Amino acid sequence: MKANLQSLNQTALKKKGSWTKLPMMNFVVSNSGILIALISLIVFFALTTSTFMTPSNLLNVLRQISINAIIAFGMTFTILITGIDLSVGSVLAASQVITIGLLFMGVPIIPALFGGILIGAVLGFINGFVITKGKIPPFIVTLSMMIMARGLSYVLTGGRPMSFNNDVLSFIGNGYIGPIPVPVIIMIICLILTSFVLNKTRFGRHVYAVGGNREAARFSGIRISKIEMIVYTISGVLAGLSGVILAARMSSAQPTSGSGFELDAIAAVVLGGTSFSGGIGKIGGVFIGALIIGVLNNGLNLLHVSSYWQMIIKGLVIVTAVYVDSVKKKKST
Image (cartoon, rainbow, N blue to C red; front, top):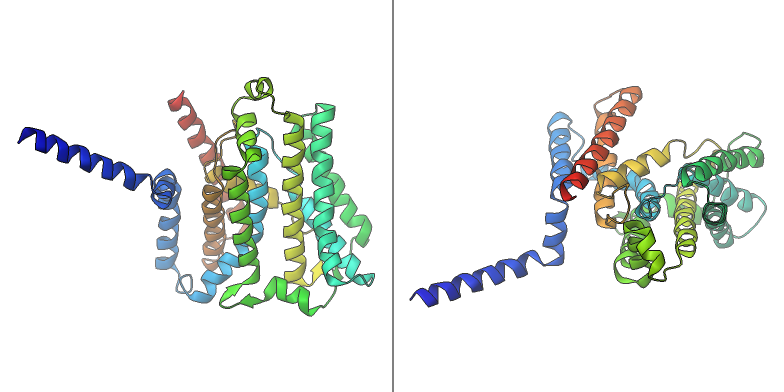
């Protein structure tokens, strides 16, 4: 009888272990803290506003977070290798200006869109090249690129907005495929692709290795400079793609666009559990972090909270997330 009970207990434990190893359950368990925070925010704004839970507003929230989420996916790569990319907001503006500028010059829509993404790739590659070859801290390099890319946007536009109407462009920014906005579909595709790259490819494993222990990665034969250049190029590509989407949404280019977007992206990445110490973080968590930032922005706007107070609240959110990350790191150590 005793042997039978032990056998039953072992079987139950095995079933419980297999249940927790399911991908979805593992995702929920590993991100339980931020999921609780997200659900709490949704419940709070649902109770305090009459329009938050309407289908149109929820779709609007997803449309609004699409740009920040795509930028944050790229930012995740840089933070995973203990870097950072402060230039993403300015790269977005440059991409937006290039896209609309090419359309003004009579370039067909598809090449114009690729031109906007290409300028993001080029600026991202320059960041990675200078960081690796010049041995300059990423903070300094990307801060300099932030200023230069913003200056490029002003030079190309003369400091004035540029507008251009095009049906295809408008569809990308404001259209729907079924009930889902096109920017949301693009965001989901980026979520799947970046998650696949980090979790299922050799390059992704090398990114985690470089962030986890740079010297060990070097001794194991990983070309760290190559990884860094690719990472910053990816960040530039996704910032450029975000610029194209924003240009499509507005049917215009503003040289001031993207100001402060790097802060929202960093907030989403850190809230999503990515460690500034490198080597720890998942794209799924970053997506939840972007949702938290988007829900927070939307709910505070519905409550008519001043934009000045919103800046303070977002700053507190970032500090809190970094503090929690630091505490978790100390406990694990």
